[in-house]
Length: 126
Image (cartoon, rainbow, N blue to C red):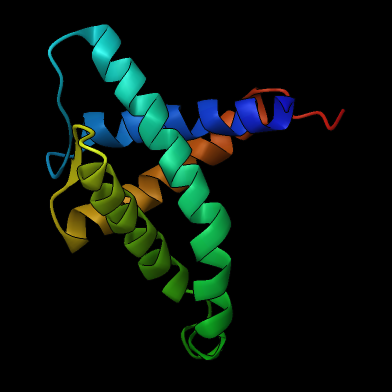
């Protein structure tokens, strides 16, 4: 359970940095508390997408991993962020990614920040 909470906090922080740095990724809301709650719900959706969909996509695109020497990972991360944006829209959450290029750059930012957060936050298996 602790690992789940740590990953959710890391994803929320990474998404917040991407929203802060990129004009193409937006998080709207009337209050700060509303934005934080939306951010954590989107982090849960993002975590679920990465847990369920991403391994399937990686398995199906394995030949492209070999062909592109792993650079296809950037595209897959962008697609996972776009899928999260679509699901957030379906759930009436105020999170939106404005296209492929913001998703690509956002995916890189989220990967770097999430990695840094996992280094900083404790990640013990109980």
